[in-house]
Length: 154
Image 1 (cartoon, helix red, strand yellow):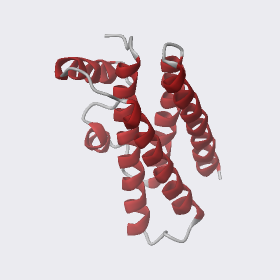
Image 2 (image 1 turned 180 degrees about the vertical axis):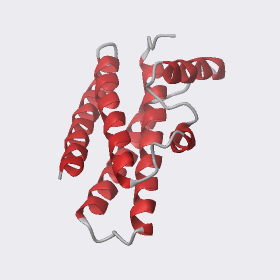
Image 3 (image 1 turned 120 degrees about the vertical axis):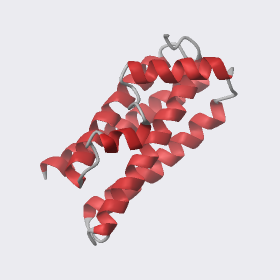
């Protein structure tokens, strides 16, 4: 199933942002468990988590709802297309993608890259208001990707 309406795009964007918030919360927990709350990586991840929460709020404000069957089809299509990880954060953990900080950074970077691509795709067919929000958030996700890449290389 292709995302063909703004509301479908907003639904998938909400799911993507929810997943990002959970991922950064998990990364913070791992760092806290290692006593690394005073490190730059922790502050960076905490800041990205707050921005993802803001993105989620902005998308939710634009999302007015869809039929439950359509939502389910969209979710399945997003998993099949690799936009969302099957089983969400728990599925990613079971697949070993969240076993340590380095693997979480790699996974987060791949999620941010996918978000940039998808939000720009969604913006191409969105209304003016949604288009602006999607493009703004795509730019912020691009910045997150750069920060994560720097953390992985530094």
